[in-house]
Image (cartoon, rainbow, N blue to C red; front, side, top):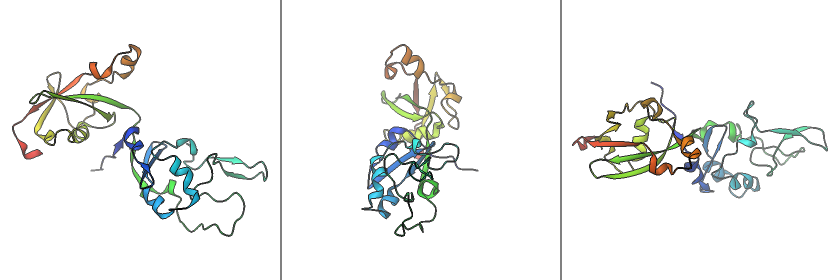
Length: 216
């Protein structure tokens, strides 16, 4: 069975914004560049990457080739990488330079060793109500996630979430399907058009305790 990819929200990526913990996203994927920062610590070529920590940098890339965008150097008429924020790690100098070491192998943007997951194309808020405690929690999830993955997110609020039956409108949810596949429509656009507080009017998922803590 092929393992499902890990999905991240843009907010989750944004908190990794220091040189000791640096993530970026581009072209729909999420990368942990912390090891790259450690390897090139103190190198001025890290600066553009550090300034983009926690952000999406898809505009650096050609979406078709998956490589760095290029342009024609007006002085040499040569095609070179387009780096409006300054040259960065693994980008060659615009002119021949004997000091440039190109023995790094695969450039970081093509190295899946840094890949940690997929950037969600659409996130949504979900209200979860624990019928045992009457507590409710609104969490941000990825629309691509199945219910077991949403359950895992919720475990930070309830470590025994696996010991509950998850229901929507009285029907058991299929934990192997997404919210949409379970009939829980994404109403963000409607809420936006009506200027409604979507936290208040979210359709709730109800959790019913199974009296079994073995799944915690």
